[in-house]
Image 1 (cartoon, rainbow, N blue to C red):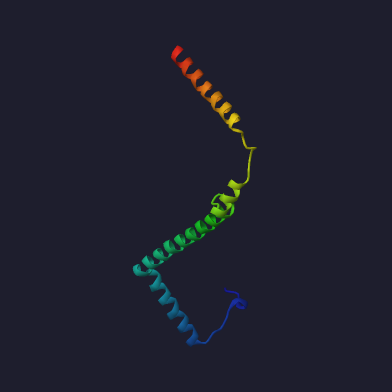
Image 2 (cartoon, rainbow, N blue to C red):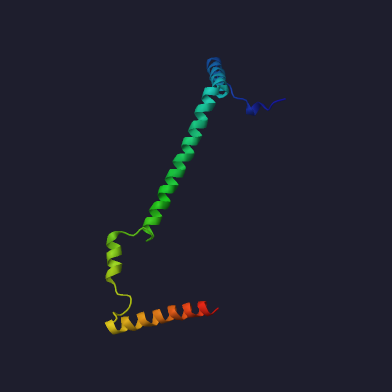
Length: 111
C-alpha cells in the first residue's frame, strides 16, 4: 500500500492539464520532424562548440608568439644577435665553407 505521506492532492482541472501536456510531449517526442530538428540542433551545437574552441586556440596561438606581428618581426630584426663581421672575416668564413665543400666532393669522387 502506498505511503500516504507521499501523496499530493491537486485539483482535477490541473490534473487534466498535466495529462494533456504529457500527451503533447509524447507526440512531440515521437514526431520524425522533431527528431530531425533535434539532430540538426545537436549538429549545430557541436559545430558552435568546435568553432568556439577553434577560435580560442587561435587566440592562444596568436598570443603565444607564433603568430607575431610585423612590428614584432621588425623589432627582432633590429636586435643584433652576434657582432658584425668585417669583410675579411666574411671572406675567411666563405673560404672555409668552400674548402669543406670541395673536400666533401673530393672524398665522394675518391670513393
